[in-house]
Length: 368
Ligand code: ADP
Ligand code: MN
Ligand code: MN
Ligand code: MN
Image 1 (spheres, rainbow, N blue to C red):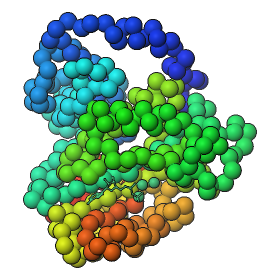
Image 2: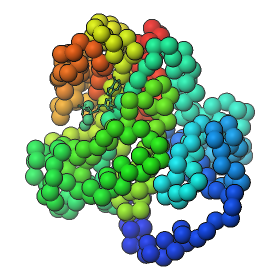
Image 3: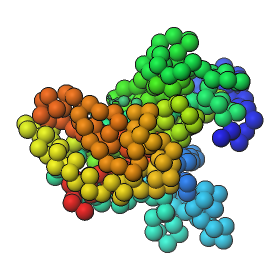
């Protein structure tokens, strides 16, 4: 999957010139707000900026806005205006100061949610299950690509050495473009994304960051914002960050978005009982979850969940302690302490976290 552009001039543009303008004093009371939303693919992120004359303290203070949905696969040209409803505010690590990033969900001209607005039903589920205090932590794996579609730093006519030395690796022969990872981590912290950690992954040029624990709807909000920051920073470096679940076919690990999950009862003494009950419920609706765990209802994940490369088969449900070949893993520590959380290893790297967390809460907390 080569880039749609031949190359990126972004990293080569003179950043000293840019700094001169970013340092300009801005008139009192004016800020820039970048509105960010999910497009009609359910994977692509779009953004545009407006000037505001007040510093909002909650999304409710922000104006609704609109955009041309016919250019984002979300509307027809004759009836293209699509609405942006602010739902969460983050600090802007690029423009700094009082400038903000505004996560939005999207509505059609008749105010119905767009097809890829999965936040609204996720929010309903989270509200219904709020008393159980559902927490999530998602491990977002991704791959850095060059513009020819090859993983960044891979030989152009061949392959790197077999997997083994790269996971959590250190050294120029083991990891690629740590600059992007470090920049992204700091940007998440600055913005207010609840980032938990990062590590180099099993395939060279593949990385992971974790967001969480987050309660309820904040999981989806923070992960989408973290993805925006990743793409935006990689853009500056002239590199592509892909969330494709299997960027390289063959003996190379795919990319997932393991979803760690707990309720208050699971986190308390002898919570292992609730964890096992949850696994029992999950085992009865494997297909429903597979449909919710990638934007193509399982087609993307079929390339990844092969039963090899630390995955379970897409066709079977399985669970086990410390077993990375299962659908659900109970971390060793959780089994020892008899409380904690479970890890659902099935979600694809390009999943919509609203759909994933909604499915888990509906199955485990709401018995749907
Ligand atoms: P792995 O061992 O699978 O690589 P990671 O350390 O990458 O695990 O990620 C673990 C994730 O689990 C983190 O995002 C963390 O925030 C999350 N987490 C920790 N405790 C809980 C909990 N009680 N409920 C939900 N998520 C949790
Ligand atoms: Mn991990
Ligand atoms: Mn991982
Ligand atoms: Mn994991």
